[in-house]
Image 1 (cartoon, rainbow, N blue to C red):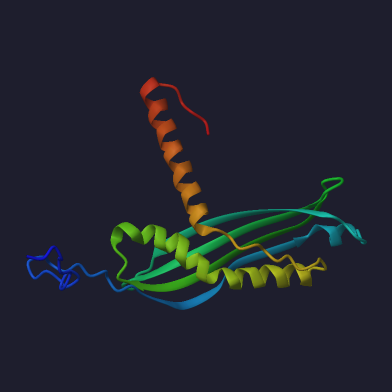
Image 2: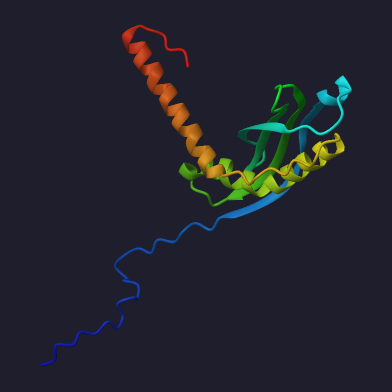
Amino acid sequence: MSDETSNAGADAPNPDQPTQQQPQITQRILGQYVRDMSFENIMAQKGVTGEVQPEIQVQVNLDAKKRTQDNQYEVVTKLNITSKTKDKGDMLFVLELEYSGIFLIEGVPEAQLHPYLLIECPRQTFPFVRRIVSDLTRDGGFPPLNLETIDFLALYRQEIARRTSQQAAATNGDASGNDTIA
């Protein structure tokens, strides 16, 4: 008698168990465009010239909605960028940009569609957003503003945590009869 065991066929599929295939995800960018854009060059309007040390603040918001066509979604990356002088806090410029991507997405389970739209889709259009911001600030007379890569997963998690805490505060406020102001 032998103490050896055979692993032959251990990796073979068991005919008694149903095979679980991952859905095949198909995604195509059907189009992308600047939906809305504004650049207010406050420094030039005031006639200020010379070297300034800017302090840049970038706010990012995302929006996604289903289109009337099957499996098509519009994902909008909204940026609000302000630049102030470090020393006096004088406003240099304000840049607002809404950049849309139209996506055809198939095979993403419904439970995973929301995070997919707000993480993966903006990640794919971000290089175009970055280029527009860089060109616009350069054309406005400033050094090109090259945005750092945005972690859309972290941004999504922050938004979910914010909404969860708002809902909890609203629930606690309703239960106690007190209104909570966020």
